[in-house]
Length: 221
Image (tube, rainbow, N blue to C red):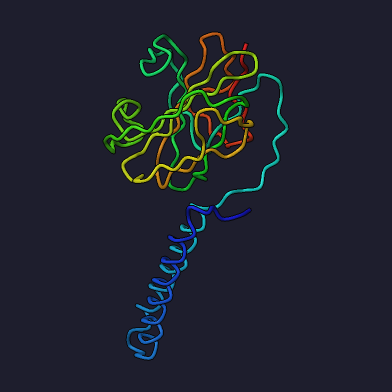
């Protein structure tokens, strides 16, 4: 496991704050009548440190690519699988699969397939809760399209949630990318949408808990 570079500054600031709290704790400990406040604050410090590290962790996973396989781009839970009209890029019907990422999930995002980045666009927007039906179209988001070597294209979106206030991405149109390589990061609760061709074989169902770079979403036909 490693810590994501997007967390370095936050982790440093967090640790300085925690050290300050612990300094106050030591003072309270010297005032014996307030030992119970010291105990509560110490537990709070340990919980905060754990949550910060938990959020920015990136487990080490080795992915062996399989022909036409769509690999999960993020940790989380499948909350939507439905046929929708995609109006930004394809202008036609696609299968939408949405993955909700809670603050306890790994928040690094990974390419679902290998290919060439054909489209990448950032959209300013709202910060509705990530499971809201309109979050896909109204929230702050980025949209990407990868063209696979078989000619099929897959669209995927990073969508900010009520807590997410920064979407980071590291790819541009024309980039050659590999499945399971990192393409971005979303800070705090958020969502990833996949828009797939209608004939895609889907291997997940609503309610499934999925892992980025481990769970097979489906297969391009």
